[in-house]
Structure formats: C-alpha cells, structure tokens
Length: 305
Image (cartoon, rainbow, N blue to C red):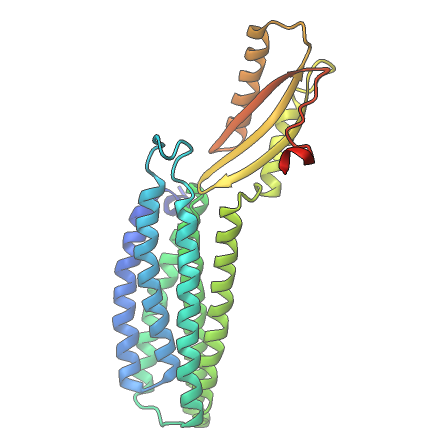
C-alpha cells in the first residue's frame, strides 16, 4: 500500500482533530518566533495560524453535521454543511489578511530592527514542516472522501506553508542586506496571497450552495455509462447533475416503448441506476420513465416563471 493510499484512508474527522492539535502547536512556535525577532513577517505568519485553528474547529463541526443521516426536516441529508465550513474559512482568511496588511503598513512607515533571527527562522521552519505533512495527508483523504471541508483546510495549510517559506527566505535576505523595509513588504505579500486564497474558498463554497454541476470528467463518465444502454427503443435526455458535499446527484429522463410493461421498464431502469452508481462513487440517481413519443416540459421557460 502506498503512502498516499494510506493517507487517503484516514477519516476526515481524525485529520481535522490532528489539524486542531497542529494549529495549536504552530501558533505557539510562530508566536515565540515573532516574540524573539519582533518581525512583522513572522507575526503575519502567526496570525494565519490562528485562522487555521478557528477553521479546523469549524470544519470538524460541519463534517459531523454533514454525516448526519437524512431526517424529516432534511430529507436530502445534511451534506451541504461542508460548504459553510469552506465559506467560513475563506472569510476568516480575508479578515486575517486585513489585519496583516494594517500591521505591515504601520511597520513600513516605522521600521524597527530585528533580533535573534536564527532562532525565529528555525521555529518557523519546524512549524511549516508540521503543516506541510498534515496538509498533504488531508488532501489525499479529501479526494477519497470527496470532502469539501477537508479540501479547504488542506489548501489553506498549503498556503500557510508557502507563506512561511516566503517569510523565511525574505528574512534571511534581511540579515544579509539589513534592508528593514523588506520585512513589512514580505508581510504585505503574505496578506495578498492569503486574501486570494480566501476569495477562492468563498467562491467555491457559493458555487456548491448553488448546486453547481459535477466535474466534466464525472459527467463524461455518466454519458459513457448511459451510451451502453442506448438503443433504437431506449433514449435518454434532460440529464442534469449537481453536487451536495460528498454526495453526487444525477436526474434524467429515460424514454422506452409505450407498450412495454411496467415491470420490464422498471427492470431496465434498475440496471441503468446500478451501472451509474458503480461507475461514479457516491452518485444518487433519479430516473423518470417516459414513453418514447412523449416529451416532458418541466424545463419550459413558462414553468420557471
């Protein structure tokens, strides 16, 4: 078994608990690094770790809600709860970016000397290594479990790793050149980078809540599966897809000869449903049976008014 496969099998809730623990550890390391050096670049890095902690706690809560079974008030399940996690994380990232920008501009106007950079940079590298290892494992698991919350947290941690790497390189240049203005400029770059990531997460969350269609490769797999059943007596149309958290849905019309018995038509529909669910993990199918010479008008413009 490969390392990626092993990481992918770790349940999302376990990884999110690890994320909380790692966030607490990195906050301690990065805060100590900032305290020792008085670097606003390292302060911005520590502030982003605070966002990591809040995001991981909220993501764990949303994943637990998303896994609740369907009930009378939520007959389609609670899967969309994960989109709230990604949206919340994106908003938190944007708030952190605003705080970093404010602090960096003040330091740019009033530069201050940095101290004990060697120890501070070492602590930052250690925290980045922890975040990088966890982010990689979370991304593998998010792909296997199709978890938007886990993917959002993983991508945010990867952003944190690249942010820390940029800060370390920049502060190393400060020690060589003694350009104090480079420290706040680095912090501004960090803020703009995580702001971009926050906007991306909010956008993806909004798209999910608005029932965005499935990925192009998944739709191609659905079309390929349906083509196996196409015949002069069977055709499909009005195929529409959507994603709700880890669940995938497809609705379609299946046309058959009008003189077929209900039992025969239902048997063929069952075969199509089984083939689709086998081809696309996590897929739920709704197939409406119609006679060959009948067209449904559920998507007429007049019906949408």
